[in-house]
Image (tube, rainbow, N blue to C red; front, side):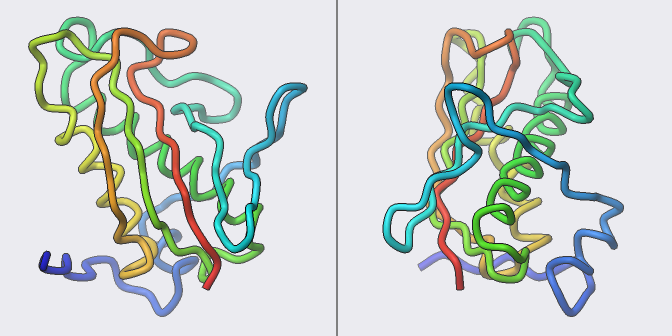
Length: 161
């Protein structure tokens, strides 16, 4: 059994912890072809999230060639923040979000091999904000390319508590 990470960000609610981190959930919009989330029973599937902020993609390139590990980690944290915004759209309140599974896609060179380190940054954000409700099953996958040449895309499955 895995050991829980200590709750390092203080606050009585997920919203307070998000504010303590100096973060704000962005507003997400659907497109002609997709919506930010879709519920099937009590399970909520979130569309893949890229590291957009205020309509601008925060980075492009391939990790291990054009993008350093630390930059990819920051991009992953921002994509996870966007996923939290989609989850809140679905359940109505950050304190009701429980992350079930996260898939982290990293556009990386074949020899990079540290996709899990990129994913850890996103996992840490979810746990910092949601506490135990942020702990999740996870897969980190290296891929040849992602939409808009972004280094990171995150897909999440969650539920409401």
